[in-house]
Image (tube, rainbow, N blue to C red):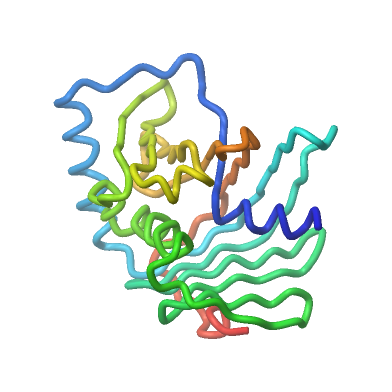
Length: 208
């Protein structure tokens, strides 16, 4: 049960907000969006290792998992959890494919919350996330990062997600940290490392 909640929460990414963040001016936000959008259009593939930390009110300790994220434009995305268990989620052809330690299943993602969240994740690597009509966006900065904070507009998404935050290091155009707060107050942070842009990605990454 705990694993299922953790995996579902990866789709709903959640997080913490830094006290030293300050709001960008209109000109700064415009320049940030323009830069990220332009550079993201050059990304065809992206792979990164990740560490996910999930904090839940009814647990004393955080749940920490590790794995690999792979993306291929225009709309293929996979999350492969490797520690402490084997679990894969692949978004492809408007469906979600799941492999839970050999037990495979699929879910139709059309017109569902999963599709909207998947689109935002893919959009973070192609520059389209700033134009997603499902979210309002506010922009912040601190000494090391530029930050885009997304708040769902629809009542459906607000049942699950309170806020999503994407952090971009000042010297790069790809996300290094995704934080989100769920409606329940539980939080999840995903940190990306060893990011590889436009390197070959095996087709097997998007199959189960």
